[in-house]
Image (cartoon, rainbow, N blue to C red; front, side, top):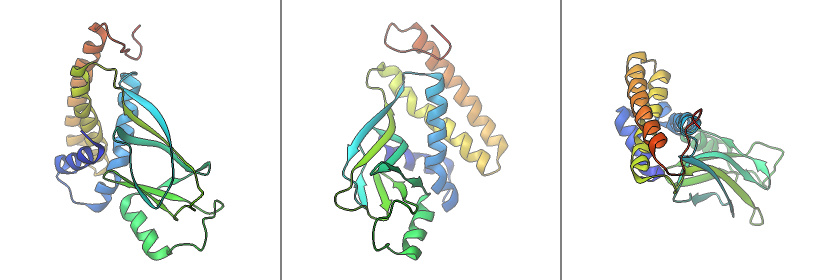
Length: 196
């Protein structure tokens, strides 16, 4: 499942077109990734890649969620897509790329967008979470469901729906327990937080 498929699935799963909720889905997914990574320590791995930054570019195919994005060693600030679009529309493009001012990014589907546009000579670093390719297939198939459940719980809490959040938390806990048991009993390279 690619990041764009996961984000679209989450929007469909949540049955929402509310622009604020949809805009925060990447944040909810980021929180979900941290939760899963803290409990199944080898399922998501932090990766880093250098890139030539432009105003808009494709993300790596194994990208799940950003940890940090930098241009010329300056860390960019994340904005939800609707805030990013509004800032670009009203702020216009500065005359030059100035690291002393705020630099922003957003992620829409499989695309990283940066504002203001970096200069041609800029260098970029993308630190992100991706799935560990060494995990057993059965566990890899379970991970998107874990991320969906944890992300949905965050979204429902944001929307003020504690009952739906609790349903998702219960499902997340059951699936996490199954994943931990799968990890614990396998002879593979997996490790579970707190289990040696």
